[in-house]
Amino acid sequence: MARDFPSSSVSLSSRYCPRTEMLRFSQTFSTLFSAGIPVLQNLKLCAGTVGNKVLEKAISETGSEVEEGVTISDSFRKHEVFPPMVLRMVSVGEKTGDMGNALDNVSTYYNEEIPRRLKRLFALFEPAMIIFLVSVVGFTALAIFLPILSLMGGIK
Picture (cartoon, rainbow, N blue to C red):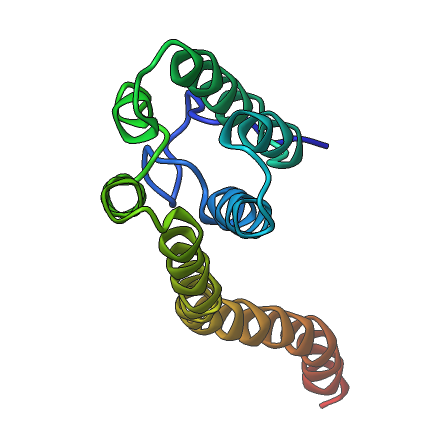
């Protein structure tokens, strides 16, 4: 199931493409480019693998614009789904002629960033879960012991 962005609700990830889709795109593009696949064909293949309709559309439009002579970085800048770091790395890759290495650096960054963000997110939810579980256990204990105590008070 493909997730689409930007959505009408406020997301935790920002207005940019979710990091997992950007990781998938950068890994695929880097691997195909390093294998010698032409850029236009590479963009078409990447568009089908990202798993997100908005990013897929942006990549497909980039392919059409690159056919007309626009650089990949200029085309990416027209779409709000690409984070600034990706735009800079693509631009550097175009200028140096080493797009594969530039996008490999992007995928390495996201491979490290995604687990770090997940760990931080779980660290935020952990205290809330503890408080919730303590309250559930406390209410259950009260539900059990209050009737017993009231019965004991009625015996005297």
